[in-house]
Length: 306
Image (cartoon, rainbow, N blue to C red; front, top):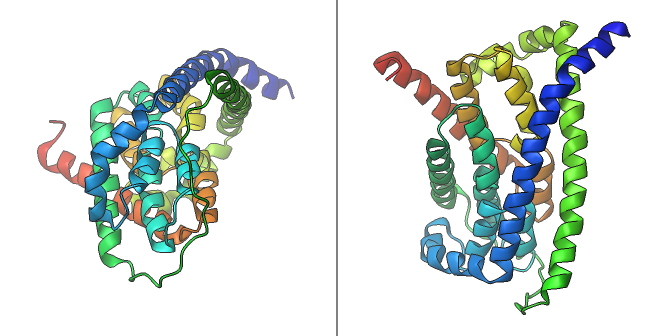
C-alpha cells in the first residue's frame, strides 16, 4: 500500500497540470462552437461544403452533420443525423467520416502537445475522411430502400439564455467526467508501470502492435485511444512523453495511427445505435491507419529523418 501511495503521489502534480490545460481547452472550444451554432455560422460552413457530398453518396443536408462533428464532437453530429432521413448505407459512410475527423480543434491541440505537427494532423484526418467516404461509396452494396426513421428538424432562433444554460449544464457534466477519467487513467497507468504490469501488456499485444507497425511500448496508449479517445487519453500520452518512455519516432507512429482511428467504444456504439454498420466503420479506419503507419515507416527508411 505504501508503494501505491507513493506512485499516486508522484503522478498527481503532472496530471493536475495536464488536466487543467485540457479542461480550459475543452470549455473554450465548446463555448466558441456553441456561439457559432447559435448565430448560424455552422450552417453557412455546411452549405459551402455541401456540393462535395455527392462524392460520398450523401444528400447535401448531411454536410451539416459532418461539419458539426468536425468542429464540435460526435454528439453534435449525431444530433443532426437524428433529424435526417438517411439509409443504413448513408449513415455508415457519414459515421465513418465523422469518426475519422471529429473534434478537430480540440484533438489537434492534444496531438500537437505531443510534439507532432498540428497542420499535418488536420490534413491527414481531413483527407482520410474524404478518402474513406469516396471508397465506401464505391464498394458498399447498393441501397435496399430502407430508411432510418427520423423526425423533421425545424431551425428556429431560440433565446440565448436557455441555449447558454443548456450548454453550461452539459459542459459542467463533461468537465466532471473528463477530470474523473483523466485522473483515474493516469493513476492506473502509473501503477501498471511501477508494478511491471505495463510490460506484460506490451508483450501480450506485441503481435497486434507489430501488425499495425507500432512499437510494442505504445500498447497502453493504443488501448486508451481506442477505448476512450484522444481527449480523455491525452494526459496519459503526455505523461509517457514527459517521462521519456517514448521517443520521437514512437510518438509520430502512434499519433499517425490513432489520429484516424480512436474512440472505438462509446463513439462507435453511439453511431451504430443510429443505424450504421459498426464493423465497416471500425475496419475501414483500422485499414487506413495500417496503411498510413507503414507509409510513414517506409518514408523514414527511404529518406531517413528528412
